[in-house]
Image (cartoon, rainbow, N blue to C red; front, side, top):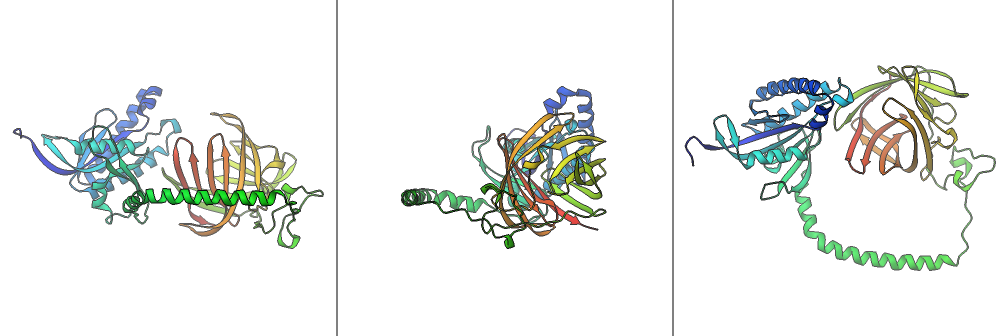
Length: 426
């Protein structure tokens, strides 16, 4: 070993800005100003958590801690502080850091550290979501039962210039029960050959059964469609109902009344990036596009939402006195009461600064389920929508007339989640 070099085991935090090149390309001066302010925040929090900033080249920040617990607590504190600051910035100026944390052996030379321990932290940082934290298995083993956080196992990751795959975990910055998936994943891998054979046998049996059923029904007269008994449904069919208009027999029907004038709703949601509160107040019943409607104010946003009084459909949104979203045509939208199995086609027109045009989507009511969120358990419809390669899944509570849980699945951006965590009705 060269003189002046020494080795040590340390917790390394590596962070960089997501989309830094874009931010600099749009406004260099503003980007440098925000980055400098955020670095100061990070330096203060690192010091408060008994760590030290080692280097900060470009948009990167490298820090070390004697304890993994201190490193993760510092990372969570930094991300939450930056979330609050970003909430005050325009969307295109928000600056989000990705963070990687590793516990590893490093070489120390003066005030700098080197080695695979540092390199792994940098590779984990690249696996993190903007505004998120990713940690190695060596770090996870130290904090699994010590912090009130959730963790999602990402598997063994092959990363650049590191000989062996690295076990990685995503930190969920919410008080949840930690779930270690690694052992389950190992068992699943060992059982895969057996499952493949079993799956093949089952698939063959299913194919034989399907062919037999097809041949049986091919020569039968199809039974007549039976409409749902009136006493079992609040659905009022038109004068000449088509098959598509009649709820299937035994369908679960939702009965809901729109909140009365003066009713106030306050709820708080939490996403992977931040949390926020929003309050609605039903301000009046009136007319909109020759229809009787409910007007609902979104407090603090100078915005109003319009709902059709007869069908309870959303008809449009008004912001700063201008109609920015509008439903069309009204007759083909979601209709209440909802029932399982129904498909709807929805059309919307957007007139905003960033985007103008029409949106068409297909909405299908899949099931009625008990959905549990931190606010409690609610009976809610599971609804799926598809549009241009994007599939959205969300649960709608007729009792609250709110989305109690929503998951967006994007074809390229992975999965993000939004949950209702608090709801009050004064």
